[in-house]
Amino acid sequence: MSDKIKKSIVIQGSILAMAGIISKIIGFIYRIPMANIMGNTGNGLYSVAFGIYNIALTMSSYSMPIAVSKLMSERLAGKRYKDADKVFKRALLFAMTTGLIACLVLFFGAGIIAGIYKREGLERPLRVLAPTVFVVAMLGTCRGYFQGHRNMVPTAISQVIEQIINAIVSVVAAGVFVRSCSDEALTGSYGAMGGTMGTLAGATAALLIFVMLFIARRGERKSELSGDDVVTEDNAIIFKCIILTVIPVIISQTIYQFGYTLDDFLYGNILALKNVDKTFATESQGVFNTQYNQMINLPVAIATAMASATLPSVVMSFTNKDYDRVKEKIDMVFKTNLLIAIPSCIGLAVLADPIMAVLFAGLREYHGMATMLLMTGSSAVVFYTLSTISTSVLQGCNHMRVPVIHSAISLVIHGLIVGGLLFFTDLGVYALVIGNVTFPLLVCILNIRSVKTLAGYKFDFVGMLIKPLLAAGLMGLAAGLVYYGGMHIVGNEARIYKLVCMIIAMIVAVIVYGASVIGFRVVSAAELGKMPIIKKFIK
Image (cartoon, rainbow, N blue to C red; front, side):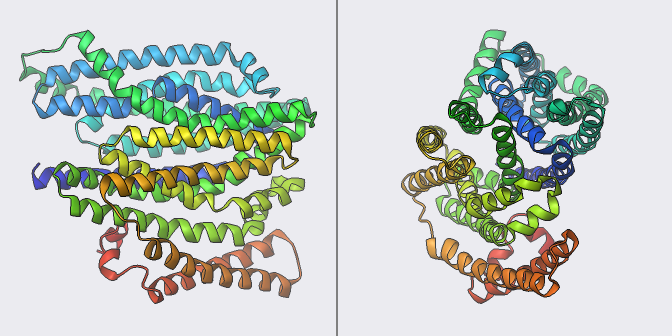
């Protein structure tokens, strides 16, 4: 592989990673007003509906971008342009078929699913999400087409535009539906339905972008195909290749997604069995799935998006059998992510109270619960980061099945822990937090053992965990003293005072953490210059 192609892959990966970060930040921002508009019941229904939607999406079309990209790039590398084009057309037909089946099952089975999950009103947001599965199936195939041509820009642009449209429509539609609903008991259901409309609108807008791109590229595509008169593969071979490519990804992702919706199923049914009030069950689950998970997922998403800029070069080094470079790059991926994840974990725990008070004023009586969930469960940030990155590293080193097996083992243990705690104790929603921490912890322990065994990599616990933890500990101490000391001086629990004290505490935290990282020699200047995305700003 030429240096030019290698450089192109790294650049394209960086573009996609940056788009992923921007999309996640937009997603985080718009969910705050939407969560406050929908209320706790609406948040509970919205989050459960999305868990089910993600399962349908994963089983029907989630893997299409990867499959189409892989199969097309293999044929384009051999200048088999007509075969590559045939792959795209058959993949689009495959995605439309599976997407339509999932859409119909979700739409007409929404009432049955709502009964299974013990969630009244769940059918409304599910019926809005049903056509979204069909749209996203086609969208994923189109993204795979351009990624197969080693062009990540359309995917990156469409992701950002999709999220912007999603944000605007979700907030507006949720507000309109909540205000127009005359029955207070149905407000949460209609609010969740309005919130899901943004997902459909965003995906549709992104698909229209690709339609315009295909129209604009019509001449170039015609010229490309005219230079190749050979079609070597029939439909049966192509469909077989598509199925064999998507199945491993579907199995892997279904295990992850099933973990989320399994908690929803267990929580709703076991609490119903114990005669816990339905409204409380829905609202408390909404706090866990929305306020808690939203704060946990943001630093994980940013960290993993940054790592995705480096992982393509890990794959290249492994393919070239440059194992010393592989170990060096794995080292950098882990270190980069933990430098973000560990202080995020400490910061979320220390400033849990002002974060929930400032961002989610609509919590009201659930403020204390949300604060406690974030304080006790913030360590999930570190474990999810480690499990996600170690999974990507194993897959990048051609050990595709290993993380799938680890995830399946962890999911079974996770289900037993959460189900047992819900049934035999009165922990309630805190059982979900325990499960949310233990699941990624088990995955990352198993994965890191395999990375050590299969890739010959030795994890530096002192340099990557202990030193950043000491730096983050000092940061958390400083942030806590500034915030709680400031609130004691002010003597007023008003939201504006919490916001001001929190901002000052966060500024102090950044300064202290930066100084501590340098003081403990957590990262050298040379390493900083090699870190993905960060090195762009240094230059």
